[in-house]
Each structure stands twice: as structure tokens, then as C-alpha cells.
Length: 256
Ligand SMILES: [Zn+2]
Image (cartoon, rainbow, N blue to C red; front, side):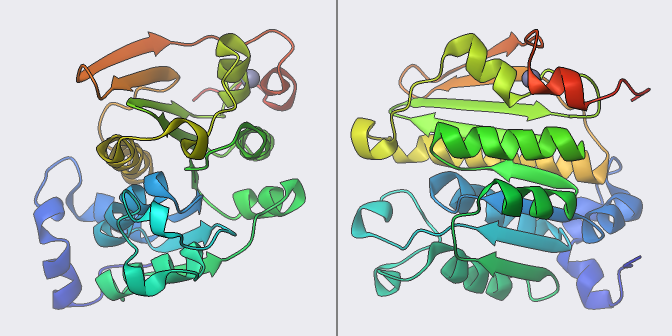
């Protein structure tokens, strides 16, 4: 169990410790938390700095991609000097400079289902910041199996999507949502992306993850939040479990 060890650490987190809903106890819960971030593109670059600066004790960053000039429009942890280098490694370096107190691990490869299953089990919350359906479904299935909460984010064109899945009960899960909407397979490469939309959604993913880990706030579990960056509007849609989905088999009903 990690505790706030120095006056300097207490000062670093003082502005959130002074919030009655967080307090010292909430801060120590964050220090003892482990978050897995899959995808260090626009969403990951927006979410990770808030997790690091807020004092989440352990961050694991997974991404096999390298930094391209066309990423710099929205992936704000990277600079021109980083072109060609691995996103996960550079992001880890930047975040460690932001907060040397926490442990950050970079995994600069694309994780397969087996590796995801192993990683998910070792973390308290997973952030899906990826951009393709196959990986999203693999992350979901690993989280459902391990009963680890998943905060899913997506962004394309002017549209953002966000949802928190507890995975502590028999659904719904991300797979239920994808079955419901028949999600498009388009990526930012094909469809384009308005940069601040990934910032809005990524920061919102960090917000939900901190609430879950710190045990404060009212978490909108299983509510699909849709952000329209063109009209500047949010919509909220309650989602239901899909009959026959994997979440119906793996999860057993629990009290929480
Ligand atoms: Zn499901």
C-alpha cells in the first residue's frame, strides 16, 4: 500500500486533495491504482497526461505504431523531433518527466488477444484508445473475462463516443454496443478527424477512470455518450445487454 510519502508529494496533489470528494484517502487510492492504456494516438495522448499528473500509481502504455507527421495535428504528446519513433516509448518519456513519482511502462508493439488478456488482469481499469474494431473487440473480451472496468473512447470526423463498462455484472459490454450500431470500420486515415474532438473524448476517458479508481463522483455506467463537435452537443443513450453476447456467459451477477 503506497501512501503520500513526502511534503512535496502532498503539495503536488494538493489541489485535488482539497476536494472533499477526493481527500487524502482518494489520492492514496489513485497512487495504488494501475491503468492500462491501449492506443497512444489522439485519445491516448489526451487521456494519459491527466492520469499521470493526477498520480495514478502505475500506467502501462501499449502501441506498436511509430510517429508520423500527420499525427502531430492531434497527438499532442509528440513533436517533430520524435518522427519515426515509437509512440508508446516517447509518451512514456514525456509522462515520466511530468510526474517522476509514478511507474510508467511502455509496450511498443501491437498486443494480440493473449497478451491483452495477460495485461488486463494486471490492471484496475482499462482505457480503450484504439482506432479499429478488431482490437476494440479483443480488449472488450479480455475485460469481460477478467471483470475489469473498461472506459471506451472513439473519435472520427467531428464525432466522439464514450462509454464506461463495469464488467462486474452480466453486461452490457462494448461488444453489445457494436452489435447494436454495426460500427463503421473507417479510421481517421480514411475519414479525417477534427483534432479537439480526440482531446474532449480522451480527457473525458481520464475523468471517468479517475472517478472509478478514486471512488468518487457519479459514474454514468453503460451510458453511451455521443459528442458532436460540429454542433457542439452531447447526447446520452442508455445501452442494454445484447442477448447471446459474451458478457452474458462470462460474467456472473454480483451485488455491485
Ligand atoms: Zn456484451
